Amino acid sequence: MSDTLPRDASPPPDTPPSADAPAAPDTLAHRVRSLLRRPHVRAVAGWSVVSRLPVYLMSLATVLVVREQGGSFAQAGLTSALYTAGMAAGGPLVARRLDRAGRRPVLLATGLLYPAALAALAWATRPGSWAQLTAAALAGIALPPANACMRSLWARLPLSDTERDTAYLWEAVLTEVLVIGAPLMLAGLMLAGSAALALTTVAAVGGAGALGLALVRLPAGTDPRPADPAGPRDLPGPLRNPAMLALTGIMAACAVPIGLLTLAIPAFVAAHGSPGGTGAVYACWGVGSALGAVWLGRSQCAVPAAVRFPRLVLAYALGTGLTLAATSQPLLGLALAIGGAPIALVSAVEMTLVGSVADGRSLAEAFTWASLATVLGDAVGQQAGGLLVEPLGPRGVFAVAFATALAAAALAFACRPLLDRDRSAAGEGAA
Image: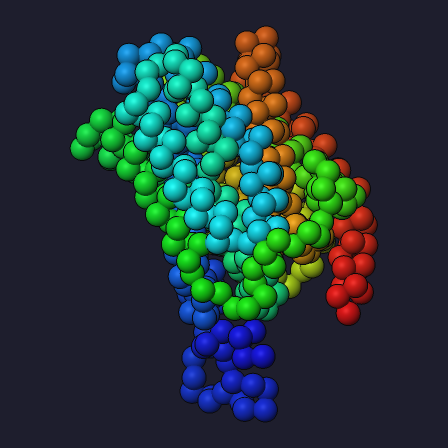
């Protein structure tokens, strides 16, 4: 089928290329450009980026709005916590509905309800009121499932294995870019107006992105059949699959060191200079992860994902250990930049494995559980870091993070036969 090759694909083997023709550069940027030239891909990828803008800044935005309204930090924290709890509780259920009913009805409903709930929170409620807390929880539940939708679409679109790997690598890099860039966008909007106006604008843009993603026309068979009754009805859903359960456990374990470092980094910076340098040190972490994906990603696709995964988790663990050698703010930034290089690659290969081990009828829910596992691990790490940073000091927390990351790598190597066996079984079933 012609749809399985990019539009600018090389000539077939029986048509040798001209000796004078330069070889196409095998870089991530070139591969992403080739992917985006595919039919249907450019529009769905573009709308998915727009729809995900609120994901990485809305918790902060709700805090700023409540404070702007005169609320206390306790009220702001409770509002943000209920928003996050709504996402955690509603995410798997909304994703399950996405798998059962299809992309269009779920994205249309959430694309309208989400900005409406946040607009009500910003303009029609007061801090500490039941109305505001209800609006926050409702907004979290109604967050458009753009991440899960797009990652399940990458698994279903007619792409080659190399193109699919490139798509998941793009997803991982995009996450790093949005984590860094979305708060900057919020800050820019607040310069032009109030926090409430900034929150409402971002929510409206995200809702419009969800509507656009819902209305993009895709090849037949890409979306699950509406009202498809397939799939388990119980709460765990895709987690009944042992390989999927192992994968989410590994990702939760990998996220714990990130939560630990989130508390240890500002403590280290405060002890070795001005606390104002914390933001720059954090930025080194994200930039290193994005550059690692660009630099190392092109050499990854030749190795099976189940083989790559434990190796990358081990590289991530060793990179975490580099923080133990830091003796100043610049050295910590350098350690985070170098040590963070495998992070986006770990995330990309995890997406590849989710797409291969999960039941094709519950892909959106499987990707949602994988994301929630990461969020849970990060939260556990932050809580542990808060308890350990004073008695152990930042260097002691760095050591705990290193040991935890090594344990995650050991778990990944132990589960590799399970992931391989599950992929083999999936392949036999498809055949």
